[in-house]
Length: 608
Image 1 (cartoon, one colour):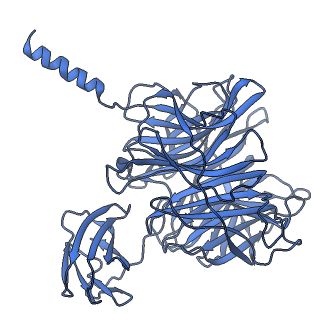
Image 2 (image 1 turned 180 degrees about the vertical axis):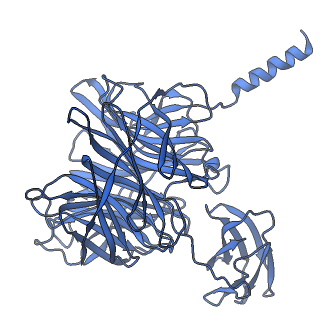
Image 3 (image 1 turned 135 degrees about the vertical axis):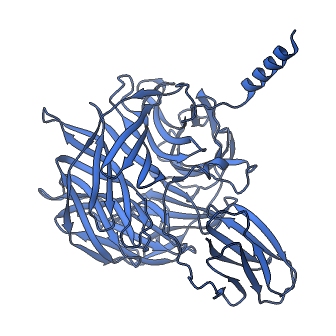
């Protein structure tokens, strides 16, 4: 055989064995109990500190036996190929719980670890000997998924008068100072009384800083579904308000609520237009302009067709911190399209890619709902469709809907979805979780189908709301924590692989927070607790480190990127001033950690 032809065949065979760009669909369930409901509501693509780290993503899930009186929460860890690694969190062990639900999970930015938000209905774990109707649960874990604290939130003095209060948080973020901010809804009773927006701020140690419900004029009910932090540290919430028509009900409209970092309201709006209903389900900050940031809000809106019938479609809005609308659009076809999550990529010059997931009913009959991946290109006043694709049926399920979308590589996205699966007959179903991959680098349309829904402008006008804060006296109650049962993946379509390390470099913004405030005097050291001084700040190619505490053990300097990836290390052996080189690092924000085994101090450094 010709030598060159032989080498070409070998190269071709090697190429076949290499991981190619690939879409995929993988299901997560319990092999030993097929009627065991496994339902995730949030996940993170776990961007590792080093490229060889084994974990790839974490699923924050509900685990429910066929016996509906038993349920629990778990945090499942998987590698890049979707193989199970470990399972962790279960608060309230050994109890019969009618409804125990996960809400959100996020990775810490100010430290190493995670925050989880959950929600319990009618827990048999009493508070001060009294059964309560609803109990939010907030959990902080370290990097190894061990609990730092696990606690539930309720009234400081629980009584029969407030035990039936509706307390439900829907979203949480980590503020730039490391605090945790959560938002949702509150009512003195589950039904028959007004529901207000609820927001709470906690320290990283779990202590409550402030806690308010917000009463809004012209509305009967209001709910916060998502929030973010502005550059000036104001808190921006979206969700919906119901404009009262009679009693405690009315059509829903998108809510925009701006709070000071102290929880005091600045302004609030309901966005009204030629639509029967609308709501915001996700908000992402796209600028860094103190006092005048811009935000993308995604959600849904019911537009009215020529026949007069409402048609729910994806809603995308661009709004300023003042509440002013820059642009608003809807995307959809003849059936229902509803968005649940949004991430963005800044292309520069006020141009962005928007990536969304949710569900559609426009293109299938055997399945009542199917997951979609939606990519849009935005410039102020203009929104264009890049791709609308679905993940068609690969197993026996009646509906499936996308919940969250995350960067899973440089041009790869992971979508978390849940589906109602048929076990043995149409009347015997169970809920399972899927993780779907949309790889933009592949030309192979395996696992996806392309569609072309129109993108249209929709006109909204802001209606000013007067917002009154009402303080609620909450306190955290310690909760227990145990391990739970193992789940298993089942590959339904394509080759499953997440490149979590490359996701760091994807440029995707999931929940953007404000830039830290830095000293502008290059000759003034940035000091902390009088032990360590680091200067200048901002810096160019180096910083000086002065370690003032007598050195009795090994002192190490570590430099982390804004994503908390370790970039440099240096050891300090005496108390003389040391120079730390920043050569080779691009301009941007870095964290410098200095300390020994007993104590560490961390500084935010800006490199010009």
